Length: 155
Length: 75
Image 1 (cartoon, each protein chain N blue to C red):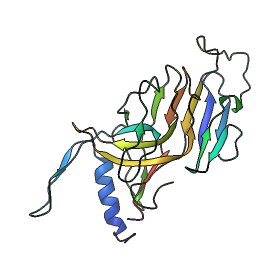
Image 2: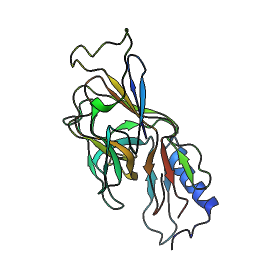
Image 3: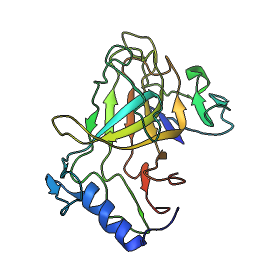
């Protein structure tokens, strides 16, 4: 059932998740399952093969994308602005400087938290992407403020 | 859309559908930058290539990406 959730609740949930700068734990009541800890800051990761709803993609590495380190870079605090109409965008720019040719392209991104075992929160394909060996040493690859939109409007 | 600018002189290009530097991938629905040399570039006298690569350093800025935490969301 798409679009079943009151949008005011969507805004509250997503704002709580993605604007927090400190860890917090959601503890379900009796029979509600395991506690769930949210661990900011979030990291933006680059992918040469885009993930899916259920599985992470193939992340770029320092080997095929010199200047990039697996695990990505912090999106700062807070990662996103408050959600309105079920959506928001990234609050800070994220930039990598290439130190060699990126033999793998960048087709997708994922956003993970920084727990001891990081948890994947968001994923998506880039509408325009960068092919293999286009980025070379000295180039920078950046995501501008408000370039990443996250939407739960159809929940 | 990707904003591509020369880090030396600031000449820039907006790459998206129909740009000669990008190819459309019907499999993914993405416009992929495949040809660096097709990016617009008109350097001034102060613009120098990278000393090691001989290329002009570029700044790729993603202007609109998609992250969809729900079915049908994003863009």
